[in-house]
Image (cartoon, rainbow, N blue to C red; front, top):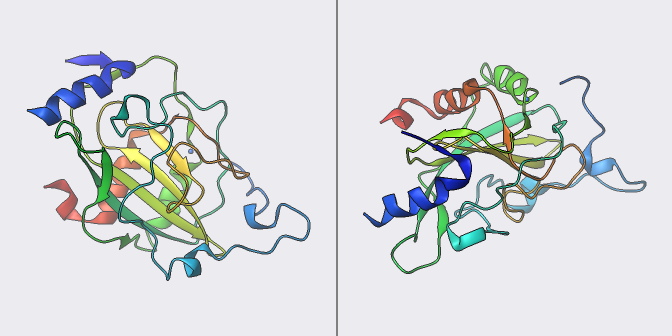
Length: 207
């Protein structure tokens, strides 16, 4: 069965109850006199929060931003990257919806990083309406560093496989990124992006 993207949150609630060219200027040094931001050091070399921050969350389902992005991003080239997996909790049991990390961050093997970087250049705004599968799955988060500045790329493992960006995974909700090179709103990417993150995370992710 296939449903419109706008109907995905309602279905998932019921279920729970029962990618470019040359690199743009560094975001950390775009403003005159700015110094590089060591977000990696700020968080003690942690790259994925225990729980994803939530911002604009229509309906309180935990899905966050639903409006398509206005333009494609121009992300910096990842120097290092990690993959984390998040599961949705709290929907249907009376508590607040939350995306909580399942397991630890796993580094992307160096030989897989160039392929993932190339796929990120194919990200583009999601269509206003699209047909989506009615499955339920986790939210995958690719976090990469460039000069120790962190950027997160969230990929839904369900529905329309939405892609959402965060310019600070610990503070900025996915889909609300605003630093130069990133964009707010929903993006879409090739199917290979989710598969690449699963491969980087390891075979346990397929169970």
